[in-house]
Length: 356
Ligand code: ADP
Ligand code: MG
Image (tube, rainbow, N blue to C red):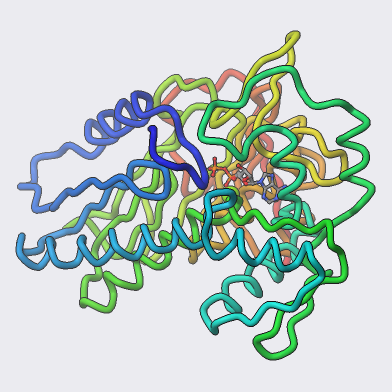
């Protein structure tokens, strides 16, 4: 995609293959009354499916969704001029910022998700993301940054708890904070789109932002069925049928990366080390709202195969699948109940509960 990216997805071809695979999965005898539309926003392809709707109404609603997504994208873009860039400048200068209610709610949500994740989801590490070259419309390129530079930024230890809210006034006690909301931006945006649908009385639909999605209702008399991408890009590893109103979000090390001297450097940064998180290839989360699912997928990716349970418990996430660097699959029993593998799994499947 060439549009300005807030959370980038290069692989249009892979995505289209996934869509085709999913259509094959869902194909069945019943006459399909699904209305499909696609638009490009948020730096990715957004696929909208609505069950049983008149074209006129669909057009109106989709237009409204497109406007909202573009506004969200522009406002919260991590490096193109917009409101977030402005807020970051004020905070860096030690100034107080007056927020609108919507801005306040967005930032408080980001803060609360960060705290619940022990700051493994840490939207205050924008400087690290910039250092690694991910604040650019171009693909990131080697070599990796100097270790000294990385250590310096890690030592500044910016986090969301250093933001202070006094009614609608925002200030910070760490001038090294640079906000980058990319780790839950798609989730937040998908939630906005779903609320527009619901406001129009539409209760059976999917908003799919490059493979991350929220589904409401059903596909006629069947549930919506969606696919989870194989971390190698080999089609669909598993499918999930959604239940009611659910979001399914995946974070993977195959979204934006480069390989350098035999190592993969990708776009999910471990705030504790300053380096791309190790040990995980992908994490899929099912949760009610998209923002929480998206933040959790990022946080659990960072937490890795040894620590994901603790963070999932704290974030109240019960459905998780984590594929580790050896292709072993770690899952909660609640996820195991819902997932259907579409390929032979040769490695171990390890099922551990997350007690709440
Ligand atoms: P994607 O949007 O590609 O599906 P994620 O939801 O995991 O993937 O978000 C990755 C984006 O989040 C990065 O491009 C970066 O902007 C930001 N990010 C990277 N590491 C973290 C982190 N530890 N906490 C919060 N945001 C992060
Ligand atoms: Mg995420």
